[in-house]
Length: 307
Image (cartoon, rainbow, N blue to C red; front, side, top):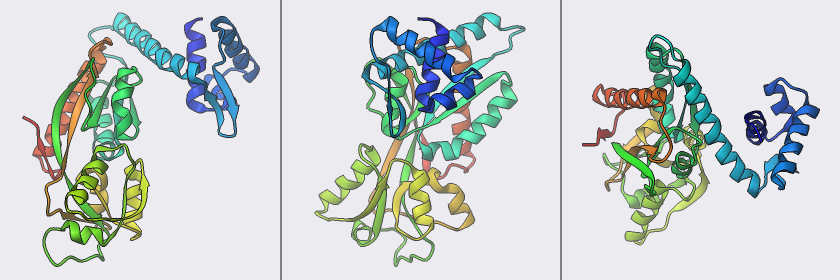
């Protein structure tokens, strides 16, 4: 087993297609297939299964994929550290974010990193919030901005900010008061984040305490689906300001404060067991300072910096 085989294998798992993986690697598909066969023979297990959805990792393949990503990232970080010249910081830094956070932060962070560390390449991984801490622990991302993380053993979670939650609705929906009650929300069709999701759990708990049922029209694991549903007037949802700040600014979505106080905590999460590269440390500091700047200058509304 060698680094080239591990790189080939991870590309196939991520592309879920042998042909696409071969194209990105600039090698012939038969040669790629042969390397995977050799890897399976050496390990004595089947790593990939062909299905209607493409090439999917087996249980053993998933285990290898998690370790391979960690190994390859450590090799890249070591190479960047050894080859660094004249104090220039380089390497690839992978950051996990929920889609709502990414909408507010990702592009601004890319610009700031480009200005400060032009030799650093950012990988923004936009995944459901429930998956972020496991990706940190598995080494699939260098750090994450995770909402309400469970904080497993071996992971450090630094509270960064608290975000208030709002009712997102089409501008045509009018309310008689400045805040929206749970009783009013119960009468609206809702699209909500899919479980497991702490935001969703808090909403359900609030309705349960009031002995209210609500009209769940649909659920989705990302705000990239929730926001268009609200914009189209199909339903309402409950999210932080960051999730739809562009639509709120251009007037295609209206947000309404809730009668009850609902918020979520965003934490910077890093592994305590995996090594951190210089590039990762510097990007993490940029991410922290950028977040504070956005809040203090009023761009990231409805939130407050954690003490």
